[in-house]
Image 1 (cartoon, protein in one colour):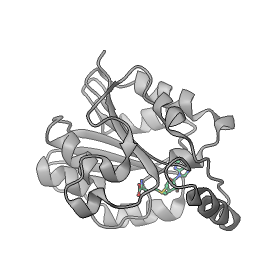
Image 2 (cartoon, protein in one colour; image 1 turned 90 degrees about the horizontal axis):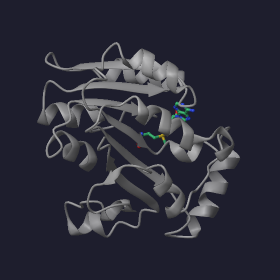
Image 3 (cartoon, helix red, strand yellow; image 1 turned 60 degrees about the vertical axis):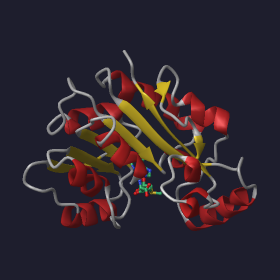
Length: 207
Ligand SMILES: C[S@@+](CC[C@H](N)C(=O)[O-])C[C@H]1O[C@@H](n2cnc3c(N)ncnc32)[C@H](O)[C@@H]1O
């Protein structure tokens, strides 16, 4: 919510490419964006048919803006860009949202190169927003991730801060930089004190 509010408000972004949508809950990207700027356009991308079924049913745009749902894999950026291009004008700035997805892409699938390919297609003035679980902040998260791994097909890669920072190579980091998610522009003391074990940051593509 804080990231989308910042991007729509201070950064003036009107187009979002949200990869790794997740099962819709409250305050989904288009709801937060369109509450600030009703003409915001959002493309949700996921490779889980159950997620997409829920997304199509629940993530409905208002009349001024638009929402689209793309069934594609993060590891196929060319398909994502081609499909998203039906709704997003890539000549104008876009916010690429990778919230809670990159830990599901192992280094062997080179997520760094995929992010580079996606960013290369975006106009100057675009943004990259990432949240990424880590073992740096609370070592107990490593154990928790291992337990989750026993229950799911996808395995988690908890990256350290330096590795997460690599996703932002060549971008200008927006304040406060790459920080614990609860310290990223918290809106209350309680939010700032939350013991979340993930890094969060937003970078801007300058040229
Ligand atoms: C942990 S959820 C994150 C949901 C939401 N972005 C959030 O931050 O709350 C991860 C989502 O990424 C999707 N996902 C995982 N691997 C993917 C891939 N290779 N391509 C596209 N989506 C993927 C999953 O289906 C799931 O919906």
